[in-house]
Amino acid sequence: MKQSIALVTLSVSDLERSLRFYTALGWEPGFHNAEVAFFQMNGFVFGLYARSNFEDELGARCDPDVQNFSLAHNVSSEAEVDKIMEQARRAGASLLREPVRREWGGYSGYFADPDGHAWEVAVNPAWVISDDGRVTMSPA
Image 1 (cartoon, rainbow, N blue to C red):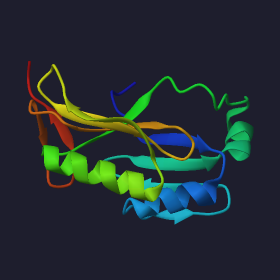
Image 2: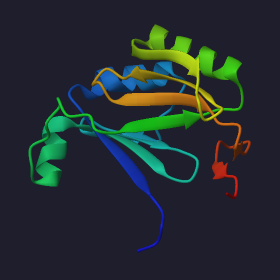
Image 3: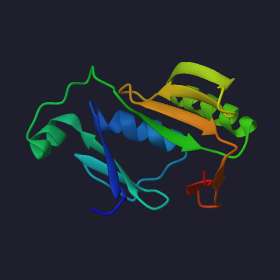
């Protein structure tokens, strides 16, 4: 298996509410219907899937109370972290942790989308971000 990810899909309780939230962040879906929405990202696709339809597809029930992961959006400056955290708050996000300087040299904060999915907004001085948002780790 190649070391790559083509699609990240989140199960959501209310697809229309989630669409409103992510479009308020400035995102535009490349495709959506009553069950799913897909956003073209920088090298992969991000999906929102109505929970009942996602469970049918998956063949298993989802536990909406279990959030053992976070997604991250990396940017180039602390000011951009602050701007995006405020944009997410205005869009209806719950702020989980205000941005702070981290022991690893970066600056980041966390918010939760309407279904409680955790998003980190961070600047990592050891990583390079291209104009299209692709992140490259600096060699160790």
